[in-house]
Length: 290
Image 1 (cartoon, helix red, strand yellow):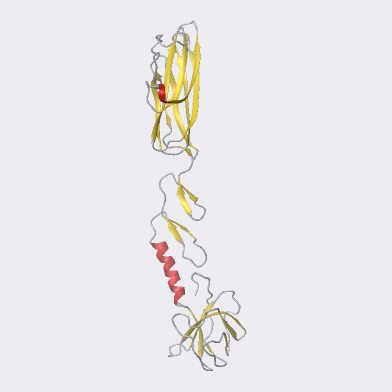
Image 2 (spheres, one colour):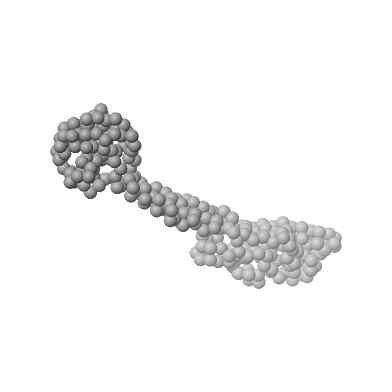
């Protein structure tokens, strides 16, 4: 008997009798009355003949048209009983089958003992639902094409880093602004900064780059930006806004740095700039794209 299929129950169906005897292989039988019986419900229902006797047989039936009851496919000898012969006037009643209680108990056990936050999903016709344990913080429910799975969404990583205060820079001395440690994947890294030469009456070359090593070593720079600004009037702000971005695809967890540096005297490294030449509101943002 197929599992987890809809079956019909009629609480008001009266106990009746067979209008004629039936053999062990008959696929239909006739009642003497059908008050309260299902008729043609579109789903199967259980019947018991000769209840409580040595000839008791449970049968899965599909319909009764008038007093004629049709047996469902493979419906004889249900519930561990045996298909057998039954005499005229044998008692016939509607009944529940063991599978009705067992299936309900399976579902109750599944629902009543699942871990908090579990998600239930179908496994196809005739199969008990499956459950998926709750995901971790930040995951969303997706699919592998067959079943639901928890996935980490693309978008801003929780490691996105911003600073709100200034970082002081001096000429030809790189300084770390922010860093991010990213897991394996494909990421869009963007860095931005506003370099403010507040007092120096000179031209500066403002530089910003993303690298895999900290300040002092440009050999691992992945991308960068440079711009000149300045003037001849001291105590006048000369502001440069810089931004750089790149795609990175670390195979393992890797740390990336956003580094700033200044060069003074028309861009030549080594000229001493004012100590309060600073870089403001800078950060390194990572967006996962794959």
